[in-house]
Image (cartoon, rainbow, N blue to C red; front, top):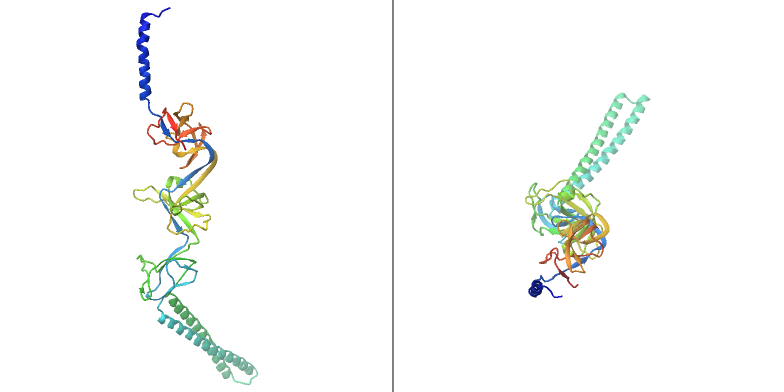
Length: 383
């Protein structure tokens, strides 16, 4: 049975057109995009809070030491970088006059003690003489006048003994004052630490820091046995923190490493700096510091405070698009399609998955490449 003439004409004309259209589509079809893929796996995911700007390693104790009095530097016992013990002499001013005052006060104390011995011995003798006279009067062997003389003499010598003892207190006070004034010419370490800065040289004139006037310290002393990090955290995030919360510390000086710590302090106020977010200062102390790490006060540091941790399905956070969506790869067709999922815990590195994706699903990681859109044909980049 032959086909109608009209149908034969349509096939005769249409078949080449369909073939031509297919060739044109094949020639003009978009080239598959090469993408990086990552598989959904299972592992630990943390919810963390991080600092908004770089933090700083600080010493638990740091003293910018200055002298209480002025004078010429006679002795300088330390230099920058020296390790010192509590009580060690760091700097001493010329102090011959004050040393002489101390010696004078000591000599006066010795003399006062001798006078006290003599006066009190006399008082003891006069008291015994008074007691003897009282017995003689009772026996009618001496007159009442002799008793009055003995009583007056005993009272006078007792007063002299008391006066001598009071003089000792005065000379003791003078000695303490002179010793204190001499001590003001010496600068000693208030705690064990390392000398960070020294301002002054032997022979130079050192002056005390006037109230309200910032002047360089004579010696800047740091307790390098106790260090912590202080860093600003956004006021919204800070409301979720409390002391004792575990944290991680990273240092620019030791990239690729992190150090465990704990939150030790939350500032009781919000910093409101011009053109910057409102933040709260958070202090994090190191749990332990490896022996191969030489921490220095002033190091730049960052903190990550761990609010929660859970083992769950996860994928890298950089694979997640706005609205908790990912581009899911179909290995059969080579097409990627947008897929929404329910997010669990998340941080800068990992995002947890409650549902919507399964372990082993492959999603696009290189979202910034041109042509990576819903429905695109892709080729997986070789590792």
